[in-house]
Amino acid sequence: MSMSTKLVVVLRSDLGLAVAANAGAVLGLALGARLENSLGADGKDAGGGLHAGINPHPVPTLAASGAELRRIKELADERDLTVVEFNEVARRSRTYADYLDRLERTGPGDVEYVGLAVFGPKKDVNKLTGGLSLAG
Figure 1 (cartoon, rainbow, N blue to C red):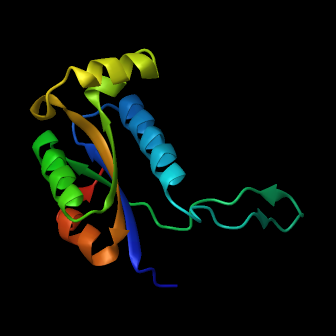
Figure 2 (cartoon, rainbow, N blue to C red; figure 1 turned 180 degrees about the vertical axis):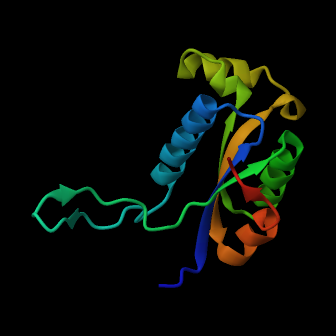
Figure 3 (cartoon, rainbow, N blue to C red; figure 1 turned 135 degrees about the horizontal axis):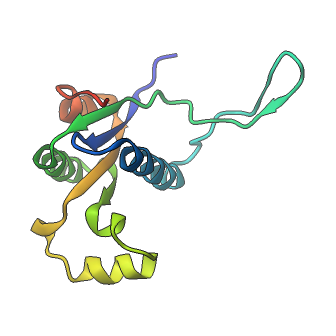
């Protein structure tokens, strides 16, 4: 099955394993909430055990520098792609209210991205992320 859309997660290349795993989970949850029909049908194994449906898109997890993440975010916004970000302001906040308060006081140029999830037409997503290597 060929898909006309693509989903990628791009994580900052200097993240430790725990932070990278957390960033991927946060980005996946946030992006999934924004996409219609983001889950496939539930499935059954050979013994009849039920397994909850998962996202039907392959999800390559790529690595990029902080500067590359900023460039991807800007270009994704220009192309009107669906983009979800996880940034250092959020990562260092204890509550969501704290995050929103801190973010409101952070200049756009001071937002440091931990990771991005990008979704849209395959050709557009490939243009932004095609040269990146797999994370890890």
